[in-house]
Amino acid sequence: MEKKVEQYDVVIIGGGAAGLTAGIYCGRARLKTLLIEKSLVGGLATYTSEIENYPGFPEGSGGTELMELFHKQAKRFGVKFKLTDVRSVKLEGETKVVETFRTDYHAKVVIVASGGKPRLTGAAGEDKYLYDKGISFCATCDAAANTDKTVLVVGSGDAAIEEGMFLTKFAKKVIVSVMHDEGTMDCNEIAKNQALANEKMEYVWNTVVEEFKGDDEHLRSVVLKNVKTGELIDTPVDTCFLFIGYLPNTEIFKGQLDLTKGGYVLVNERMETNMPGVFAAGDVCEKFLKQVATAVGDGAIAGYAAEKYIAESEIVEHQILCGGKPRVVYIWNAIDERSRELLPVFEALENNNADDVEVVRVDTYKSNGIARMLNAPAAPCALLVRDGAVVKQLSCDEINAENILTGCGCDTGA
Image 1: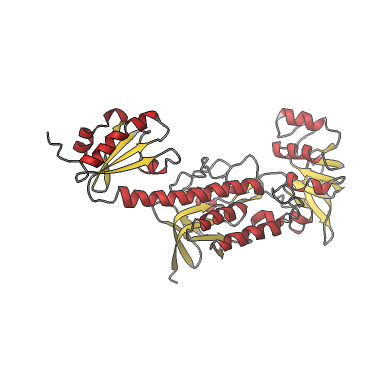
Image 2: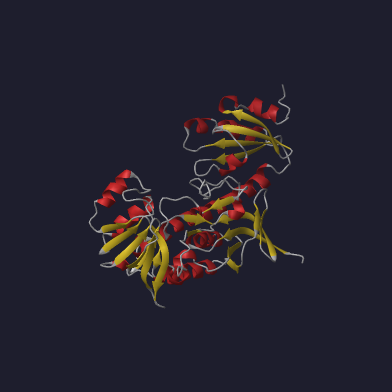
């Protein structure tokens, strides 16, 4: 079967809060944008029955309702949606390829917002009670809904113990299932000592989850198994919080994007990956806090950065490395005194040597994207371009009319 090929400016992989926000920014910038989501637009947030800490909603909002607003806003700005699974990606080069079963999508930019999923126990009945039916993965999201209730925390790492202590501000009792011997936890010693001293927390040592039990509506109890004796302990609870790890959806990016040991995509403050033109946002990145609010921030940065990358790439292609007469590219910074002092050199070139050389100024004050694309050293410096390629770099001390004209192959009249 011959595949279809479709062309886009931006392809976003993942339709959670980060991907939708990136789509809003790209669509509003009038970039031809496609968002691919394999299951449910809105991501994990749609499984949260009540979100009370997202700004702008004083009464809170259901996760599904909030994500539907994101979805509508993205569609309003022309973002196209495709519900399918991404099979592979090719991220090198100017044109990126995102492959699905029937279509290959070509794009100038790819934004990875594929998120991840909490690690599950695999115990019987788990699938029946995930998310809004009694099994939660976010104390920040669901603590208030468990006011004066009994909850179970599974895990003893930093996240489990710290979230467990947070839950004690709301819950009547926090039971912690720990798979180790009494007094042994995986968290840091400070958190451990604070948790052991917390009167609202009690511990069931040497246990793992055997089964989740309840009715058709909600979880009612968790059966814990003692790993040493085999004893089964039926523990009535209102909610079970699982903190046993998180698995980012990054399998298809291995070997192309730099990942952490845990499989998260490495990005800088601009959400840039190691691959030019590829950005990442949201829970697929290693983050201090995984929330809708932080995903929105990531998505906004990635969407804005994608627009800047495309615009700057076009400047490099069509105004700098485009052939024609020799040109000098002045890389400068408007707030740098030395950069400003050298401006008359380039003004004189424009006035006296316009037939021989073209001058292009690149101000790095707000963005150094073009300078990085050209592998320019720190501003101020000059790049000499002939036949569509940079042939020489001049440091600030080397910048003068004679060096520029000679480097560009022009007759200096000497």
